Structures are given as structure tokens and as C-alpha cells.
Image (cartoon, rainbow, N blue to C red; front, side, top):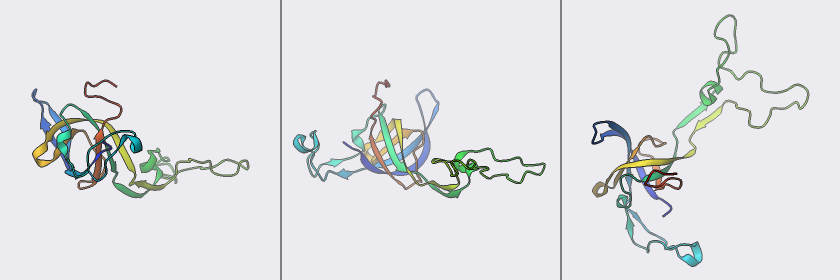
Length: 172
């Protein structure tokens, strides 16, 4: 299974048996219809047959998932917000308050180094949050509640897949 397509509903909290509150993100996952059968000869493994419906019921509480989504776009941002730079002095005649400052060298090499942190477009990139714990599964409503935050806005498309780097026992 590569992953199930879903939709981020939003965030809320649930209470554990000990009374502590757990922040969770609610994901509506599935039902997804299988459109291609994976075979060992062509793909290297065997998978579901065509027409099967896969839903949130394949996830179990206590297991871990990886969630991939597109982050919220922030538009054009300066270096203070985009990269967390400190900026210049705010008093005593400083007139480079939220700017980059010097960006290059002297005559040699005479250009800006690659990878220099500069103002530019921030956000709206694909991000994968790994090892998020599944707190609850509400199979009747196709909802999966995962611990913590998931990238993207409410209503955004997400891909939920089983964690690659962590198992249900918690070991890495």
C-alpha cells in the first residue's frame, strides 16, 4: 500500500484514560477504490485486487503513519520571517532593520554564493511528517485521528501511509 488519499478536517483534542489531553488532527481517509492490481512480476509485490474498497479501517490505534501534504502558502517573505534572521539594530541610526545585509564577496569571486538565504516565496511545498501516532480510528465515519499537527489547511488533500521508520511497538 503506497497510501490512502484523504482530507484534513481540522484539529481538536481527545482525552486519554488517565485524563491528559492529546492534541489530534482529524483526517477523513477513504473510501478509496483500487484501480490497479500490483503483481510480483511487474511491481515486485502482490497487492489488492481491482475494485476493492480500502478505507480508514486498515489503520489501528497505537500504530504510526506518515502524512504527506502541501503546506500553507505564505507568499513573498523577507529574510527575518522566511529564515529567522535577526535583522539590524532597531535604534541609534540603524537603517537596515529587516533587510538581508551584505550578500557577496569582494572582487573575487565577485558573485553571490549558491544557496544564499534571500527573500522569496515561502510555503506551498510538499512536506511529509513522519511517525505520527494513530490515536483513534472511527471506521464508520472514515476518520483517523493522529497525534500532533499535519501540514496544510483544513480541507486540504493528504496522503496517509504506514510509517516507514517506526513500528507499532515504538522502536525505530
